[in-house]
Amino acid sequence: MTPAFPAEAPPAAWPISASPADRAYLLNDENAETYRQTLAEGVARVAARLARTDRPFTGITPERLAPVIDGIDLDRPLEDATAALDELERVYLRDAVYFHHPRYLAHLNCPVVIPAVVGEAVLSAVNSSLDTWDQSAGGTLIERRLIDWTAGRIGFGKAADGIFTSGGSQSNLQALLLARDEACRMVRKNSPTALRTPEILPRLRILASECGHFSVQKSATLLGLGAEAVITVECDENRRMRPQALERELRRLRDEDLVPMAVVATAGTTDFGSIDPLPAVAALCERFGTWFHVDAAYGCGLLVSRRRALLEGIERADSVTVDYHKSFFQPVSSSALIVADHTTLRHVTYHADYLNPKRMAEQRIPNQVDKSLQTTRRFDALKLWLTLRIMGAEAVGRLFDEVVDRAGQGYELLRRDGRFEVVTEPTLSTLVFRYLPARGGDPALTDRVNLHAREALMASGLAVVAGTKVNGRQYLKFTLLNPQTTPDDIAEVLDLIAGHAERFLSERAA
Ligand SMILES: *Cc1c(COP(=O)(O)O)cnc(C)c1O
View 1 (cartoon, rainbow, N blue to C red):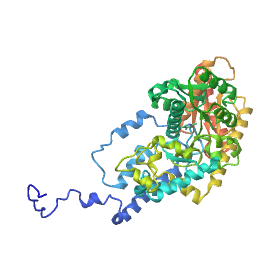
View 2 (cartoon, rainbow, N blue to C red; view 1 turned 60 degrees about the horizontal axis):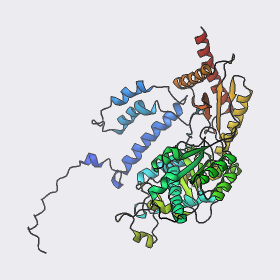
View 3 (spheres, rainbow, N blue to C red; view 1 turned 60 degrees about the vertical axis):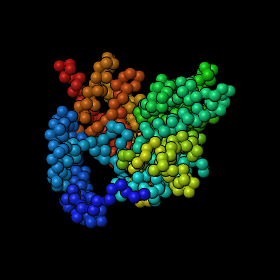
View 4 (tube, protein in one colour; view 1 turned 90 degrees about the horizontal axis):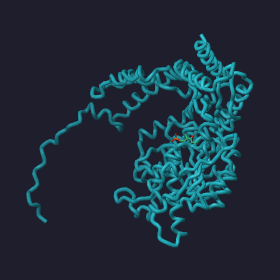
């Protein structure tokens, strides 16, 4: 075909829009020195800040910090890394909450290990995307090795597989998506009439303990089942799911012609660190033909610890959530969903001509997007890889064992201290307790005293502790994930709490 119009002659010089200064920001072979220097400067700031922190927090309030951040004109760049890092001191580094500090005892945040931080620097600079081989090459294989390694630690067989995710919430969501689609498939297979998915969904139920994570309810909503599809199973006094209660619910569902789509057992509940009786739950799931998911977002550190036996029964699960960014000392994000049977991952497989055409599978080109809810995806696995290659799994396990030991010591301190009441002996590394006013009495006052003590402590920045409710009453919580926290740190924080509580009570009396 001849073109309708003759091609125009190209312009003598193509217009250039990006200046040499703009190009100097690109990370490439020409700017390697700028990269090295700028990164070193950023690292130096963090190192200096870490050396200077004498408390986990400055106690800054949103009211005081918001104007500082709002006052920055984002349309006026500083065009200078040093100046921007100076500014970052004011807007972030100075007042950040520091998890490496031994008196940060609040949430499930760990201090991070240096090998993983090196991994973070490498993965963001190379910027592989783990959806397809042609965007990651070796990254895909490294992630696969780590999935296989984790599956091996769980005790899964050769058919296992999995995927790195952004966190436990996403891992749980994906597990329940696979469980939902497997349940639909089974219902369809066993039904005399052809049922469509919308007819099956309202009959599906998920069973989880009352101490399970809220991402289970959120997932049920996202999966079109509604949060009401989650049935809470009663716990014993140690916050472990009661197998008899689970069995009762499973029978009831069967009698009502409802479908128990999945049972979620928690290996390390967020508040109590309690571990549901995995062998008993596994046996019930096998008997009732129900998907068995273990949420080990917190307890996964046991996979490398001398307390591995606490996870007995996990190898009978259909899927397991692990958060390396909790008990493997990895920077956020680093999590995975591991499944016992790789074929179940097909429920998240979709093909796009531009990305992962079926031909790729035929050519046996490894491809992770077929197993993931995400498309473009960080190479978070690299952090764990360098952690295992530099320090090794046993060292990670020893660090985790240290915090579990510390929780045991903290429990003894609390138990012997008349000022406090502690709820249960810890299995992992959390302690739920409250200050009890000497004269006892009014439960509402006890709630207020504990709330006040937590807030006053936070405002002082000397320590950060968490709060939670038990039977509707206000409690305080330590989540220990820092092997540098000593029994003396715990004792000091208890004194600080008691001090705030006592001042509150005496001011009130005055
Ligand atoms: C933290 C936690 C989650 C959620 O994980 P994220 O990484 O915060 O999304 C899920 N389940 C349990 C038991 C957890 O402790």
